[in-house]
Amino acid sequence: MSDSWKVLALVAIGTYGGIQHFKNRPQVWEPEKCVTSVPFQQAVLSPVPWTSKQFKITPLARYEISARIIQIQRYYFDQMSSVSPIDFGVVWGEASKQSSLDEMNFIINDRYLSYNSSNFSPELSSHIANMHLLPADEHVESQLKSVKLGQGVYMTGFLVSLENPHVGILKSSLSRTDCGPGACEIMWVETIGPIPPDDL
Image (cartoon, rainbow, N blue to C red; front, side, top):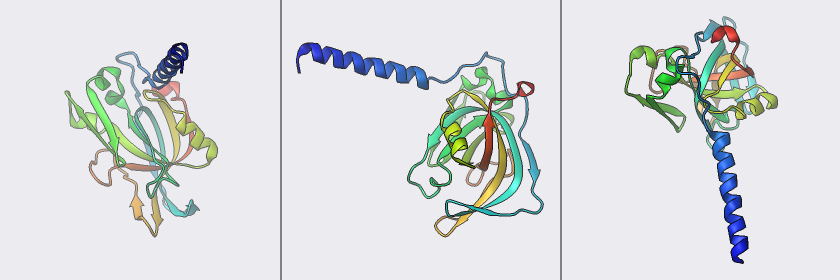
């Protein structure tokens, strides 16, 4: 390869890397802007299960959430990936303020969200969640996969339990204050869109 072609290749690689960095850069909010609403949850009293991707899905509660996305992790090969190809780490309330996020570090590993904060409090912790997301159809899946870090979203659907012979029964948390194994929300997502103005 001639020197001129090497230079062109390096320029192309650098340009592509710069574009990707810009595209993947987290959205930044004004310091005190936050999601003011809390998740809405209503128990399903007479659940009717359905099947998706060889999983039995049982609705536990109707669920609606406005939240800011602070971690995104896609899955391709684990036992849930066919029905739940993506996890969101989400925050709302005080935890969704840019001033709060600037003091926190988050990571999703093996479908668990961990974080640390220089200003930790139980109230802050109750406004942070890891969500295993089950898109109701291909359109919703495409929308979920287009979400960017720092973005605010509004999702509606159900908190559910999953069951199949390989994973047994996995049940969504129904509390915002629990932690550790079993504390993640498992959500069947029927719609996703921008946060309503009244929730900000």
